[in-house]
Length: 315
Ligand SMILES: *[C@@H]1O[C@H](CO)[C@@H](O)[C@H](O)[C@H]1NC(C)=O
Ligand SMILES: *[C@@H]1O[C@H](CO)[C@@H](O)[C@H](O)[C@H]1NC(C)=O
Ligand SMILES: *[C@@H]1O[C@H](CO)[C@@H](O)[C@H](O)[C@H]1NC(C)=O
Ligand SMILES: *[C@@H]1O[C@H](CO)[C@@H](O)[C@H](O)[C@H]1NC(C)=O
Ligand SMILES: *[C@@H]1O[C@H](CO)[C@@H](O)[C@H](O)[C@H]1NC(C)=O
Ligand SMILES: *[C@@H]1O[C@H](CO)[C@@H](O)[C@H](O)[C@H]1NC(C)=O
Image (cartoon, rainbow, N blue to C red):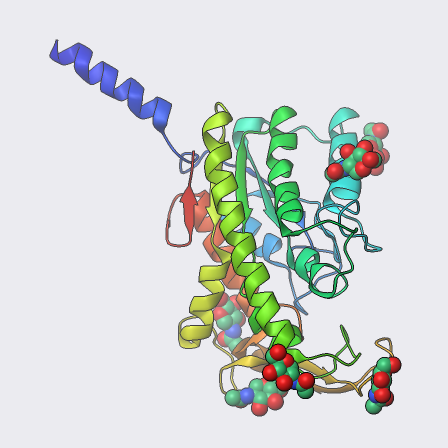
């Protein structure tokens, strides 16, 4: 009786185990936008997946591409989107046998949304008519369903950072390489705060609803919003450069004239080398390399189950 009860409890424990086990994951497959692109790197140095692969001892398979939105059906931008470019490339490599990944040993990450909600998309009304935040977030959840259907089993979904604090969307913004046209920066910041917070709340609810339906899957939600909010509140815990810590400006800051072409250079101020590590932002839209080292460290620790500070395993 005692034996069979402990057997039953052990079985329940296995069936309900959430998250991969500590040394289970060997491969890291990354999807997303410039925050995650390892070729066209957004942070002015080395991208976070390269550091995460080092920190976690994973083999890296990077599919994220700069400028990406979830789907060009929803927000049409001239960049390789998740559904029309990144996933098709992954599947073609899988089908022709150049990519062979054991599902149990492989985790898939997605960090997207910045371009979906941003200038030239939802923020400025440039989406496909009728498309809303609900559609772009649903699309990112469909990334899990699509990969699961092809055999993938481990997923880490990285939500959006507090984008109202990047210089492009802050109330005291200035014309920059991403936007030089006239705008009301207060209104942009207010709207961006709504988009990011509502989007993250919707993705959390959708992930919680999805997790119990995908048998044998492990789904984690990595709270980038909370991590970046903490970096803003306590920069001394994360930033370590040689000039005063700075969470409002960019290490590569370029001020443009109103209406100036975004392809001209602007007037730039650069903090490079050890000084750059004092900054949270690299430019007016992207986290710095030091911020990305922190993201890498925390993502690797999440996957190896050494930390549960910024992530929740839903299954
Ligand atoms: C995009 O639209 C095409 C054509 O209607 C459709 O086949 C495809 O499934 C859509 N993709 C997404 C991600 O919704
Ligand atoms: C498999 O597909 C990828 C992506 O289309 C291509 O780059 C690669 O050369 C192909 N490999 C083989 C062995 O056919
Ligand atoms: C910008 O928008 C805010 C909020 O709607 C408003 O209070 C402010 O007057 C606007 N500024 C300008 C210059 O129009
Ligand atoms: C932060 O960096 C920006 C851009 O270089 C600069 O203008 C600003 O004065 C700095 N702020 C602090 C508090 O050092
Ligand atoms: C910038 O462009 C807008 C729209 O074309 C125009 O109304 C405004 O006067 C221009 N401002 C400057 C300083 O060029
Ligand atoms: C800051 O810390 C990172 C590790 O997180 C280290 O790689 C980097 O060299 C440090 N930067 C400076 C300027 O000491």
